[in-house]
Image (cartoon, rainbow, N blue to C red):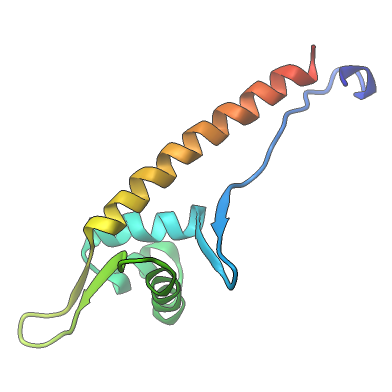
Amino acid sequence: MHELFAENQAFRANGRLWIEGPADRFLGIGRLELLERIQATGSISKAAKEMGMSYKKAWDLVSSMNAQARQPLVGAHAGGAHGGGATLTEAGAAAVAEFQAMQARFAQFLADETTRLYQ
């Protein structure tokens, strides 16, 4: 394919990976980051703030993932005297690890395809 490219320009294969169900996206880069930040901060609100996202948007994403999963990915705890919070469940931690591994394989696929562009 390299014969098609203008000279002195670098081309590469590129793309984004996500998993979608019949009704909605289940997991992608943004949702992965949200889960990671919930894990780090212990809070949906703090995770949303760090991402520049509204709390409602973050809650809607968590709700969507939880509804599509066999077991909830995020467990939320109501506020009160000791404050609220959120944590990843065992299923949520597994989803993060599996998607990170899938992302690594996808990045390798893109690197391999970029190499093939010049063969």
